Amino acid sequence: MKTFAAALLSLVLSVAAAETHAVTPAQKAIAAARESIKKDPKQSQGYNDLAKALVRRGRETADPDYYNQAERAVEDSLRVEPDNFEAYKTRVMVLLGRHEYAAALDLARKLNKLIPDDVLMYGFIADACMALGDYTEAEAKIQWMVNMRRTNIPAMIRGAFLRVAWGDVDGALDWLTQSFKLTSFTETEERAWLLTHIARLRRKIEDTPARPRYILTAVALGYRFAATPELAGTGELP
Image (cartoon, rainbow, N blue to C red):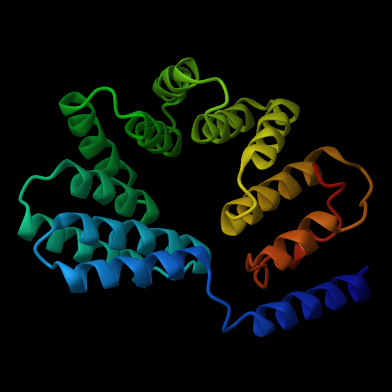
């Protein structure tokens, strides 16, 4: 088993090294946003797009500095257009990425009152509530999103994690698997992220290790597993 784990880790590291110069969706979005800012630095949209892309890059790399950069982009957005909703909405994403859940929840609730039909704001509130242990409010917000559209991927993913908190691993796997199937093939980081969590849940319910297709596929998609080689052997793909 140790030999297999070592071989898998070696594969992960080699793939990661080979992809060092690959451009991820987040990096493309960062470049596009910076180009937009260069063309028209007085418009807030470019800064908002940059901040969102930096948050996404932060999730890709687990490098907290991207959240600091994203916050600076939010500040630039508010400088050129004070009080614009999208900038504050993006700030909630930054706070969640930094695990500043109480501050994220406070801001998200205020924004939710301003524009109560913003679907993702309900998701951000649910994220913060789950992190803080308030599953009742999290459930209410997720249910609102599901009621808007049954195949709402952000709602399904959050619902899956709520089911994990309740101990319903099979239900969580079902929703994550559906989310994976509904996610566009171009969203490589999102699909890899979903595979990672499917793999972790599979480990909880399967007594014997199966072929490591989840982790290998996620690595091929570009997700970084160097810090989590224990995910080896996690079952069939959805």
